[in-house]
View 1 (tube, one colour):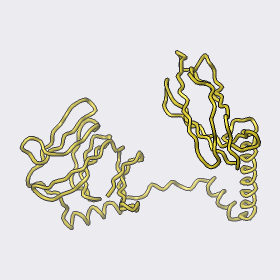
View 2: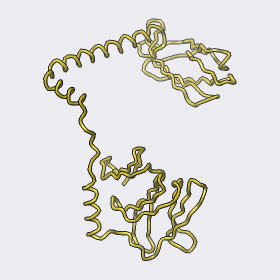
View 3: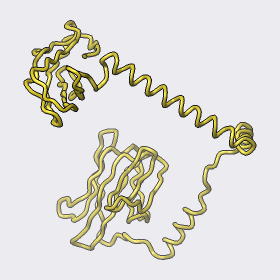
View 4: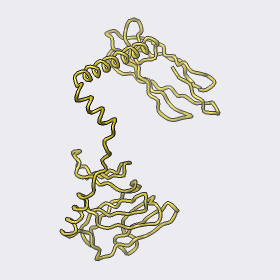
Length: 267
């Protein structure tokens, strides 16, 4: 299984085909995940979860086996052999302390059927935190019940307006030469630019594609930038030939020279 911890204080188990097996929710954010595997003393595979409130929980799939409470938050966990012991848990705390927990040879790592039933009963008895219906919610629900056709028509009209505004903005960008599509001699060129790096040294990768039926030769490429902020060794160069249907890549090395980290568009 693939175990993933998310930022909403939960842990999810997925199969290799992407189907979710189960989910577990915690009272604090998950800070660490560690696999616990035993092969010498007994065969056991579990997941150790470190929480922001100082708790360390051991799970066998979705069953809670054991809990350890620490005074500070957990910043690191690792389980494995330590010295002569076959299983030990090393814990790194936020206050720069290090703890070592040894696994007892007769440790109980499975739940009894009665304990498993009681744990499932507790989980089912936890009520969901459902918010109360406000006056605004009731009024909106009544409005949707009384005027469904009119609201649907208004939604479709607003959606058409949004699509029209998006198309007009895209056409305006292309007309000002800021879009990915440009023309050279009535032959359409598709230009795609990607920035690699965060600075002060980064690279602009250009990808040219000839969407026409004729080949182009000696196409000049010019970079427009603020010389006070950036330095480009080769601001202008020529593409020798661009055959239709193929992608041509060119790299432009850029160095930011402003001491205050100011930025400006590069065209």
